[in-house]
Length: 129
Length: 367
Image 1 (spheres, chains in turn brown, yellow):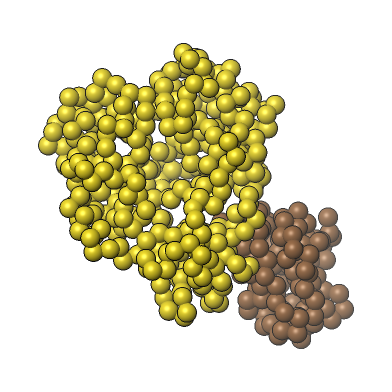
Image 2 (cartoon, each protein chain N blue to C red):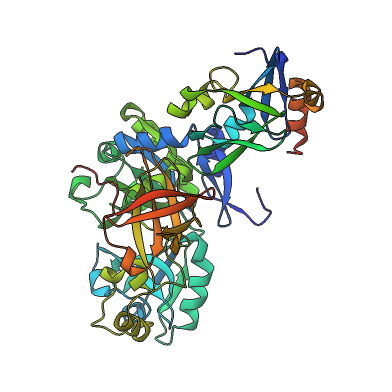
């Protein structure tokens, strides 16, 4: 299990892990449970510019399709082909092997509005999502 | 998600105890999954799955007037519902529009048991009451019975020790039923299902449902039986090419469009016959076609279907197929585009994705 203390969360259930000027993005354990078995992942192309809160990827479960929003703005520099090949990784390892893509951060200050794991847990409990 | 109107099946607490994720489905609180849709799907295909089907509508029609009444309202011939047999039939309105599709159990002695969709139960009841000039007795037996389905290749072995049918379970053939005992309680037991697998459906006294459910679960444990929810029920029925009322058929479609003409007897009189005959002579505007995706994309209900950039219809059911490992669906398309092998496009997230019309069912079990 990844150290959730290093992760920042969005209200749309993505997480962001910042390493230098690069941010890795995935979805929370809560989200993967709600979505149920992920059977399809469509990742953005390398080099694509994404904007904070804009749609960056699509994942689908047996039941429905879900948009993945970029937690911060920047350029896509990596995409995790393993989850496209085997989408069940998203359910098995949401915080580690199940990451989707990495963004070269445009402005690290954009991450200031994101929640800590503790705040995110409170957010889920509040039922406001 | 839960609305105050939603009803609990007799098995509700048992589902909670098994850790099910509960959803609202046509006014009923039912499990969508226990451990995972894919796992439950695969268990049903290879071993066995246990489903709560208590939400299905249950009616008893009886008396001397029962058969003439059913002959009039159903498109299929009720001669097929001889004692011990089950007839399948659309229920149509005067315009030939499909109000519902039902299973009619011939119980003998002018008694018939009807199993209808949960979503249409109240509508069916009202329709039947207002078209009963024959004076048949129509009894709502919904609350008195719970429903359980066991589906999958291990079903017969699991049920063998639990039911005491006179001639043994192996003698109960497909689409046949017996009124017998399961775990010592009354059961309307049939060799039927909605998954494309061998299996049984049983309606047992509501108050005994939990006892029967638990007994089957424990008897099935050595065989790999798992409780299975609505999520896998939907993927299993789609692979098996079973249309879902409300998605693949509704009041705006006649049996001609929905592909139900095999269950319509044009040699007898019934409500909607004239309209269906006229429609047949004119030709259907759209027909239900099965398709599979050639490009990586999951078709969903409502997605547009195109041919050469022109709209030709819409998807009514679609999913990733866990057994076939491809994306499949049903769509209403213009008759000229329904031929097997026809190349079509499905518009997925604003992008055209290639698909091809195929023959249903998508999946057929090896007997």
